[in-house]
Amino acid sequence: MEPSAGSCYEINSWGGLKDLVSRNVCILTFGCTYNHGDSRKLENILKAQGCRIVPTPEEADALVLNTCTVVGPTERKMIRILKKYRAMALYVTGCMPLVQQEDIFTVCSPVFIHPDSIREEHRNVTCRTRHEVGIVQIGKGCIGSCTYCITRNARGFLVNHKEGEILQEIQECHSYGATEIQLCAQDCSAWKGEKDENLGDLLSKTREIPGSFLLRIGMMNPATLLPILDPVIESLRDERIFNFVHLPVQSGSDRILSKMDRGYTSEDFMMIAKEFRAKIPDISIATDIIAGFPGEDEGDVQTSIDLLSAVMPAKVNITRYSPRPHTLASGKGDLTDYAKKVRSRRLQRHAEKLYHLQNQSMLGKTIGVTVTEHIRPGSVLCRSSNYTGVVVNKDLAVGKKIQVRIIADRMYFFSGEPVI
Image (tube, rainbow, N blue to C red; front, side, top):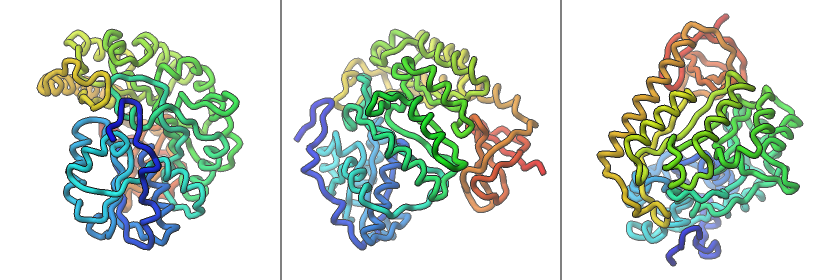
């Protein structure tokens, strides 16, 4: 069955979960935070079915691959893994089997686990695994029509998770050891409640949950954030919500944004960033840029560079455009790999220059942070109120609030030492 753009394989043709009983299972997860949230739920389901979760395929008698296919290199990596382990009892979930089953069948014959079935089955499971950083999914799919995006075809139109379930999952994550809790969706600002509540309303409800957790809002599309900008900004005044936003702009060129069908202009994006900075001066903004989109020229690249200089994001995720099957942009005059490489490196160098300019002002400062996770024995990752990461070489309890002095710039994070 070949899917058309925007469709999925029928869920009744899938299976898999009930087969995995009392086995040693390895779960390999790739892609976005939402995928990792599915794997967390899958882990709970399998443990309730008597399975033991093991860290590597070599220790397992069954392998679950939670796939991503957002760009060509990731898809090829998925195929290599499937080919390598095709002799195992192999189960595949995530985005790839939703739109590319035939490609999977060229290298192996796995059992498919529909991602929707994971969430449904998890409702019946009381087993929970402790995690220092929690993941709470607030919805799947989106209302956008980006011409390059295969995830939209895989996950479909927006399905909002219910407010009560979201609030309960936040409470459960905190009860099972999480201090940082990440709210995720393909587009968090598109979330709507049953009575038309928006993301700002949802975030305000989290104030009723007891505990000392910290919420990080996941990716938001500027097009869906614009109508609810004021309530979302107001929600970030809550001390339990990080002053951090992830707003993918994808290009500084309005001509390219129109070709992408993103639904906003560069001026819209700049206005959003300006409003956040005016009302929350220490806000940390992350963004995404696609390098080498079909039709892009050197002037468009310079426009993106100029936008980054104006916004000064704390993080820029730069991706080389990759034509994806069943998307409108595929076959629309793809640039050469060399051109995309040169442009992505130019953007990356500029982004790194901006990081160092911002980071220099932090050196020697003492700031308050919260320990959010252990990253290796004797070392912890801490987060400031605006999600700045500080690694401290000391064994500290998750949730502990400390003062640290910034001693080194590691580009994407800092090294710090506790101030006694």
